[in-house]
Length: 250
Image 1 (cartoon, one colour):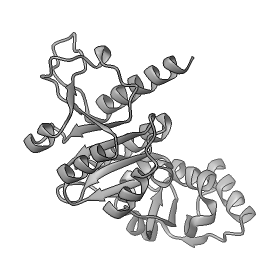
Image 2 (image 1 turned 30 degrees about the horizontal axis):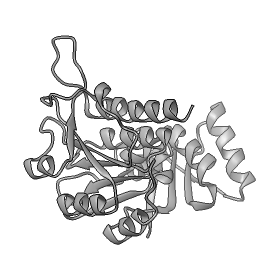
Image 3 (image 1 turned 60 degrees about the vertical axis):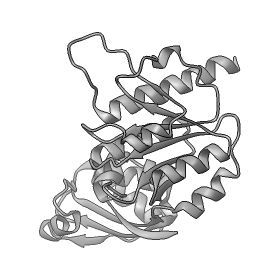
């Protein structure tokens, strides 16, 4: 499925040029700015045969919808959220090293963007989000993801419990993140086809989601703070999974 998505700011624009230059549809540039990075971006765009449209700051502000555009806004012909049928097809390719991330009603675009960026770094096969009470692939998500919104498939599903059941049927284990779990992340063997499920900001996993996990793990906390930022916790969980897998292959 294709859709149009705006990319805002120098870093996100550079990532789009590095990863998917053929998907760039429109570019608006502040022709009053002459800083080095913007000039280099303009030259790279011209190299790809993309002619940026000069735009006043007021227009860029409107296109960026309040985000810090730094003088550039892009529009990409990029993949939109995929659906359950796309996920079903992807699950047919499940292997012993398959790794998915499921986010249960995550609403903060900065958290979703950061999770996508980490998912790309560790080789996650796809990120599953819920259709209701969740943020989608917004410009803020794309900006924070720094290119990962174009490289990591995002599957938007109506019923997460049904989706987790489907994942189980395809041979994946379901691991939920829960601070009250008796099992530490570092005492758990993660060398198995896996779906990591992380709950919403401040709420954690919903009861039905939790009940459909095969096991729950916690991140050990030694200080007085009892919880971590969602994207930070997700990064720790994903990188421990990667660490174990790399260690077992040596």
